Amino acid sequence: MSMADASFQARLDRISSGQGYVAEGLLGTGELTKIRARQQNGKGPVPDATLGIQEKKKFPVKKVVVAFILGVISFFGGTLATFHATQGVATDFDNFRLLVEALGPLGMSALLAFFLLYVSGLRSFMLVCVIIAGFFATHYAEPHMARAAPSVWTQMYSAEYADALKFKAFAQTTQWGFAPPPELAVTE
Image (cartoon, rainbow, N blue to C red; front, top):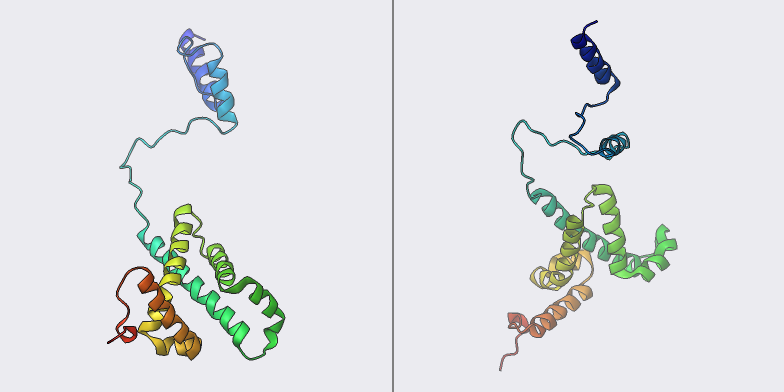
């Protein structure tokens, strides 16, 4: 066997064994064994794609909108559940009444938000923050929505609750330094 055949056969043996070939002298003495050991453990460098066009990561607008809506749903679901469990007619679910009263509207809303997080799969830090932002935006906007559509809040909750939210909207607007709503403005 000639020298070229022996060299070619050695190369085929290395290829079939899965080992790469680095010419002696290109790396230091122990570096090649360290690199191979890291590659065997799955911690070796991952090569980047060299062909094709690299796509930029796009901002997930749809996921952000869905996360905000989930925050709104969790707020209304929790407050409605708490209101009807504590103010409603006796039902088969009275065993949970003490738990609902202990958690309160915010606790029930948080419980619902955690459930929606688990079900929806929106678990990145940014999307969790958007769900929380939707929750608190609805918390501060609810009195003003109830003032704008009192009949809806009367059907969802009760007339007394809708009136209480109307006065809460008045208190918020005066606290923030805005003009009071026209129906509650003092006329002289």
